[in-house]
Amino acid sequence: MRQRDGWTEKGWTAVTMQDDSTLRPLARLLLDAVRGDAGTACPPGLRDTPADDVVAAGRLHRVTPAVERVTRAWSDEPAGWREALERAKHDQLMRHLRALADVRGAAALLDEASVPWVVVKGPVLAGAIWPVVNMREYYDVDLVVAAHRFEDAVEALQERGVVLLDRNWPEIRRTGRAELAMVTPAGTPLDLHWHVAVPAELRRAFPIDMDAMLDRRRRVEVGGQALTTLDPVDTVLHLAFHAAQSGANRLMWLADVRFALEHGEVDVAELERRSRAAGAWLGVRSVLERADRVLGLAPDQAPRGHAPTWVRLARLRDTRHSFPGLPGDPSLGGNEYSAARRGVLDSAGVLVHHHLAARRAGRRHDAGLDERRPLQVDVPDERARREYFEGVSAASRKT
Image 1 (cartoon, one colour):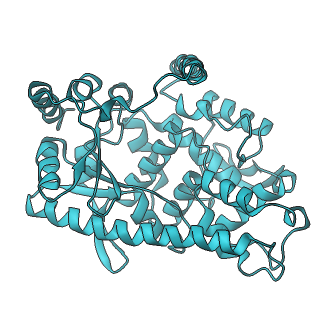
Image 2 (cartoon, helix red, strand yellow; image 1 turned 120 degrees about the horizontal axis):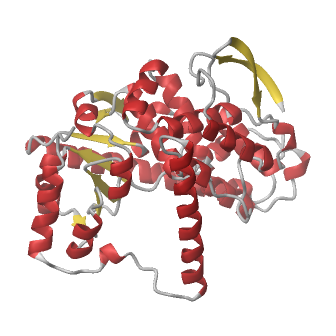
């Protein structure tokens, strides 16, 4: 393990970081690609690695274009790598350009309808937050709109050819999800949100003030066009929250947090204040610490103060499983991160629930049961539809 200076409640001291020298060569390449430094020659341990394995590892962590970017400088790149990596880079560039066009069209419709909106993740991160646009991989667009105008936003987009995929209105009403899956005429998957905590149980656990987030929104330039997104602190809060709820097990998610901290003037004390108010600080801090251990954060961006018990437990697990993991590894999950709540007891209860849910899902998969998305079964029910949108509107500006 490496040591570097970091902050504790007793002042600056040594903080343990991951020892990259123990990583498998392919995992080390992923890290070097995100950092933008993979040397000028292929490491000996990678020379016999098939191109398919490299692409699969890159896609797992959504950094395949970053791998292509650094390996093109190698004088002895293994046979087959160049074609496979360039194809992955080209595919991502096409997705990014199509996404920008689709966001521009959706933004014009929402502006015309006076619906407050922000675009998060995908095109904003790739085009404005990461060091170079052709590093981060993404496949869809996420728009967040004001809850009290959610139905208006859905209807405005549908009128211009955006297709609603989630059409099982009784199930949508029952689950109360804060997201509807759509697809643009160009084929870009579009997730329309009225809250960043999508399942209803998450919104009960994390009272994130979405109205305040939308009130603080800012504009950034991406590909020559101005897009509205969250302010710098809210951006990091959302990215760390999303990473935690997803298990913090993709390198892309940790890099999102690191680059967002570097890109914007983020007041870490304000980040903690907003995260605590939302009940999300334990998960946010856990992700910040993992990002610090894996990628290194600037001293003024690293978590401060004594680490809570749950954060130390997540740290202990990380010492047993090197990061980033690779396809086929048995320990890719990150339940310690997704289970983080306000305290140890709450988090432990959620961890047990996640473990049991994963076992049930595994049994269903082994039994070959139908795993189609139930929300996308077409069940037209005007009453259920109306009650869902009324519930969404009622949730607006609740304190």
